[in-house]
Length: 245
Image (tube, rainbow, N blue to C red; front, side):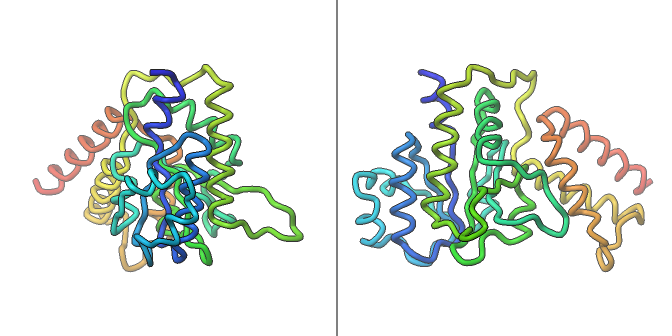
């Protein structure tokens, strides 16, 4: 199996609460143009629908294997790298990259055994803050100030194209001794961390002051591997035992 085939099989394109079925079909077509086939839909408003099939043209096979999930957390479950598209920086900024840099990170991650997710938000409102906070990086597509609105399928095409080009041109990949922690494992860690911080009186859930958001950003930014996360969970369990004693 070639590098590009191996990478393509690991990439999930995730569309959150898409309102127009035609956009799903157009996104599927954009994916197939660049050799991608794994489309995940989070609570779509209208799917399956003939309009999606019509807009997909010769990419109906991508629609045939769509995975529909009730939540974003389920759609990115098992992924060790999650990129979320964002039209703007938020109150607490996350690491923000261009499509080109995002594609380079995807290619560098190709030797990790877990999947990679690229997440796109609602046509009208994009991704919510709590959804973006489940992503390691945010991706912003630069546009003209005169007209910055991008169609959903256009955004998918841009990211898919950059990944295709980066994978074609690059032979470099991160070689690590442990696989990266998956999104599921990280969510369990964040829940454990929050409970522990509350137990020791460091975190007040009634007056959080963005503590967990900033800690989430910290750990997602460093992208801990499976062993590192196991060490952190072990440390938290030791703290929990000490509190009980």
